[in-house]
Image 1: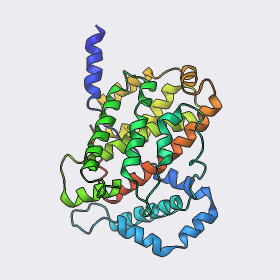
Image 2: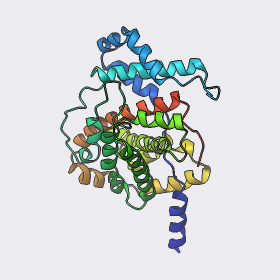
Image 3: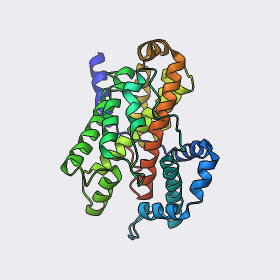
Image 4: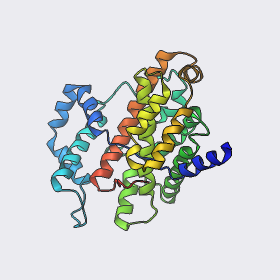
Length: 299
């Protein structure tokens, strides 16, 4: 009798798409608190901020849905965020810090991504980091998270194929999206990156929950879902997903497998890599919002 129900769960999860709730203000708060001196320096460079705003601003096309004042606010915040990252003000402890647990195997690639001189995200290092992250879902639950894993891998593949057609032209994620904005490609890498970034937000929120010291991983997973994907799902998918969250391992088993029982090391690594993922995810989220690409459609 369980087989039909299992089939139904897997079928419904086929509808699953990654999503995210913008955590921009939380990230900016962490950024602005990193070092006052660095922030003052950034604010003093008005010409640089204006250049970023020009680069990220949405075109004046009449089809743009966001008001100019909202776009200006987004562009200014992205400019300050990028400037702080480039100056090494934001979370300097992330880079070069050795991993203490198995989390490093899955997530250290995000801490190693180096932004370009323009503050954009290089395509290949980012996709490599995402690919290394995928097996972490098997740790959470190889059966329950199989649809999520499949969706992430599909989006990575689509972006990799696009990148391989012209590595120089698509050397950054932003360049890839801008090219498709100009050509209005259908079934695009732009859409794949949107959903991939939403997946990152979900997994990042799991790390954030672990970093708080919460020992109920079911509670951690449910909160991560509520803070990222839930707003993009209809009631039926929400219900099925809520049940699937109960498939995550017990906390003690998880700590033993991932950190050899060292809970303190697990919490520290979860914070380190959650922060690293947050930098990249929020840069992409703000870029999509500024260019009116962040669809709110539910699945």
